[in-house]
Amino acid sequence: MSEAAKPVTVQYFYRIRWGFQDEFMELFDRNHWPLLRAQVESGRMLDVRAYEPRFHGDGRADWTFEVTITYRDWAAMEAHTDPALVARLYPDGEKLKREEQRRFELIEAHWDIPLEEHSLPR
Image 1 (cartoon, rainbow, N blue to C red):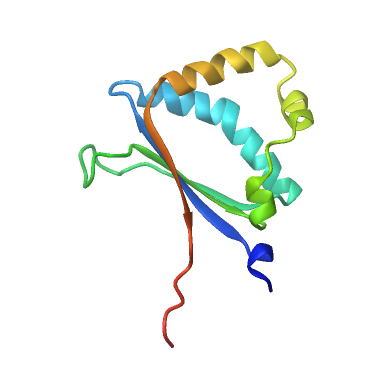
Image 2 (spheres, helix red, strand yellow):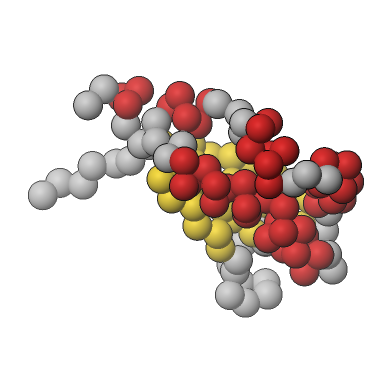
């Protein structure tokens, strides 16, 4: 299998403004998760998982929410979400736009890390 045809896993880290984690999660679950789920169903993404630290102040304080997405391949990772999918899932595009703007206002920092798998010796 060529490198371009292999699945690609990317970690998306977010640090949410203090006191706004619950609001961010509510907006993420309502507006972003359905788009991700639909893209898993379409085959563009193979898997989506989300994580929060179990304890407040546990370990590093540089992130408060993480999403790991495994894409079908590099082309799927580089593609953008189909606007027709967004319109189908969210007929009130203006409401979605406002709520997504608010979700991004709650983010202090965000970074993406495409991962290269390290083959372990047998």
